[in-house]
Length: 202
Image (tube, rainbow, N blue to C red):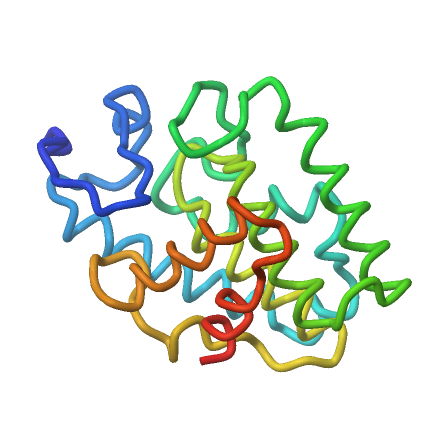
């Protein structure tokens, strides 16, 4: 069974290349089926990430955790889960830069939090924005960046973010449009963080 790629991608989604589709683990033929498999995988990853043992022992601001979390989120669906992308995408950095930029971002986030460079929510959404901008994986970057940001929040005594009151940010709609607009505002002006802060706690 071949995965159908003639799909209209939502704004901001990374299209799935044929080479990546060939790395599917389950027998999937439609985007609807893919979304269902991924959602179940992500639920299991969430349970793992927020398990008290994991929260105590793991440091989400370590490079290995970035890859491990992505693997936990998608390892039942994609063979490349947890592996940095090696190809260009329109909304991410050069793939050769990922291995330098991820540790740099993690070090920045640690510094912001330890030295209270910004209020804690602002530290967290700036981390989230930069991780999305790097776009380290072939797919699932937004969902991964939101979950790891939530993990860091909880590790620092904050509640998980609501990200648009729990709206489905994978599907097109008002919540996704607001989320993308907030990310792009920060792309344009590094001081324009208010929209993303409001959306993350809305």
